Amino acid sequence: MKRRPVDLAAVKRARADLRELVRQHPELTLPENQARLSRRLAEEFGQEESPMPARSPRRKTAAELVQVVHFRVTPEDLVRLGALAERFPMFSRNALSRAALRVGIAAIEGNPSLLLEPGIPAKK
Image 1 (spheres, one colour):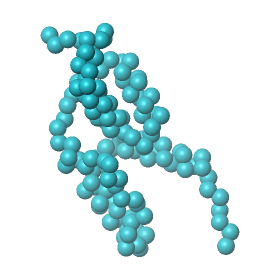
Image 2 (cartoon, rainbow, N blue to C red; image 1 turned 90 degrees about the vertical axis):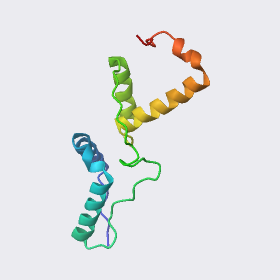
Image 3 (spheres, rainbow, N blue to C red; image 1 turned 180 degrees about the vertical axis):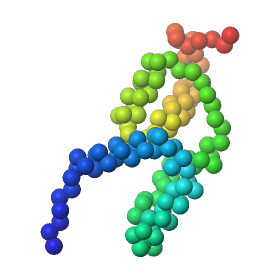
């Protein structure tokens, strides 16, 4: 049986469409919704196991991410974050923001003088 070649451009377009769908509907990434989708796909394809891969163990679940923090950022920082999100499309902008926060906190803990650099506003 001859296998059809994979249309890599179509795969790239489909992945971009899926990323956009998740951006518009972040609730799709909640564990309970993923489990429901996995069950539905298993029913649809008549499989005992869903064709969807298991959630990566390095990711936090919605239950683990219970605190919401809002803060203002400069347009430049938002552009930099967007550029990182494009460079690393496997991570959401939220995940990249959390990583930047953790890395930044670790850097400040190691060298508090970083807070004295220009562009870091003092508490009013």
